[in-house]
Image 1: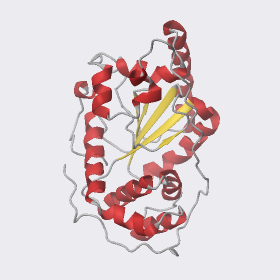
Image 2: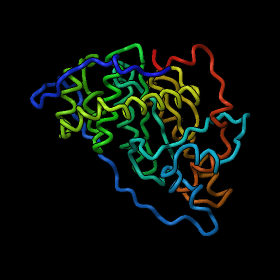
Image 3: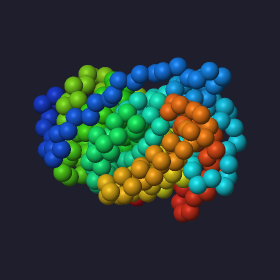
Image 4: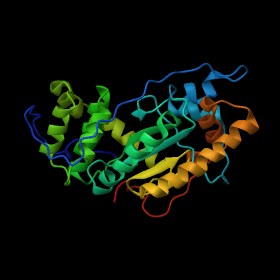
Length: 282
């Protein structure tokens, strides 16, 4: 579904805009130390380097995948906002629409998991929008604009810290609170490239089977919705044990884990969905 330019709600970014926040937690990236891959391992197919390549190139390097796998191949693009070490053995990818309540409900869980797992967990965000909703599109464009300035996670904290569904004024206030250059932010939201990025993000979400927001993938295992912290903790603990077993069996480093599990996962072309594949949000 192509995103139309006329859909978003116009607003003026005002530095003095105020936002009511419930959560004032700051989310900052961990330093990304990048150890060298083990001898004999092609750099291009390790987790250390994969995310620097376009998704199409990653798909080519990983091969056809396995249609029978319970994991879905969900790849990290070079411009995806990311928290945690790039070599983390656990990768949690969130597809979410920041304009809806479930995204706000999931945010404290993600913060708690990051605090618990540190550099063992990499969190990646992929925006999705409902093209029929003006506020959804406006929030998505704000995410693109914040990412351009390296301020996505402060924007995420602000948007998910609201105690109500966001208004255009809230989005403006979040832009101001991140410390963004507001002229650049506003220009980025109006740029054709931002619309193209959201088109591509929605298309990729459909390819990997996303049908609602938020949808998470833990090393390729899909988790639909904002589950309680305990459910995520249980899943992460089980996957951590699986990863350790894979590392020992294949004699690989943490930096090679995601490439390994993605190589054996179902490729996007092998994923089937039920319902309307054109809807990325409720």
